[in-house]
Amino acid sequence: MRVTIDPVRCIGAGQCVLSAPEVFDQDDEGVVTLREERPDPAVGDVVREAAARCPVEAIGVETIGRGD
Image 1 (spheres, rainbow, N blue to C red):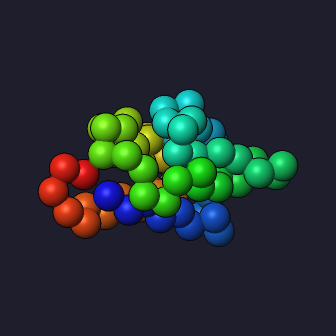
Image 2: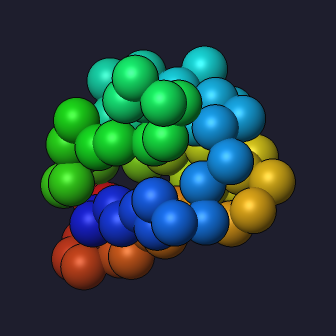
């Protein structure tokens, strides 16, 4: 799995950080940042949940192989 973010679209709602703090963070202005661009497949469900919860669809999740 590969995770992408669009910081220009981000409004700082923080739903991603609440859902998957091991993958997402926020900078001092509240804009999403990535801790892990290619997180462990074990957290795939929470990463997808975080992307689904983003109110401005600033998170992309791409499947790049088996198990992710």
